[in-house]
Image 1 (cartoon, rainbow, N blue to C red):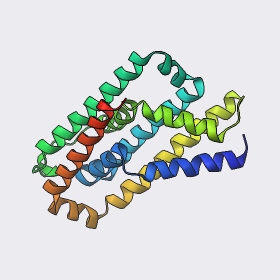
Image 2 (image 1 turned 90 degrees about the vertical axis):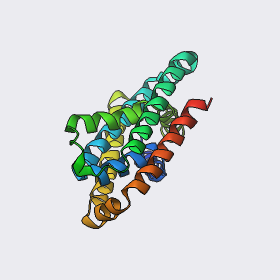
Image 3 (image 1 turned 45 degrees about the horizontal axis):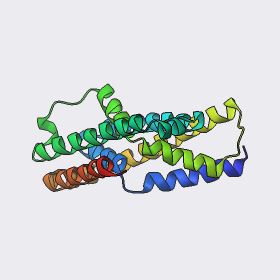
Length: 201
């Protein structure tokens, strides 16, 4: 494994993280509605799940899912339904101010983030494609562990910076003023991501 391979992997990963998706929408909504710590924890959950998918891609589980389509479909349907459930809850509570709701325990924020990524097996297919393109074959266990650690660390740093910027007083006050609108837009987007995951082959 060369330094150039690792840099290429990180650049492609950052480009994927910056693109709008269910994970990004989830972190945005969690941060502006529940605060920086909640956003950070949801980002850590997303990062840990993404690291699991990357490790799985190195271990060849993507090929196993290709040989057992029912397992892939089961994961995809479960993930899609979870996103749709989040969308429904977000829509239902769009007019509820954050102070009106009970704070979510730290563990639940972390788990909710993890479930968003664990419920999307396409994340592993993306990781597998990235690994095949960027890294040489026959990497050692230590090199694979380092790539997975690097992936998790990069995602945590990205979401931490994102959550910190979104939790500023200006961002939070702007969100509170337009919370019903923002939450319903987030609900529609999350619902659309879930529905697309559900109907895509």
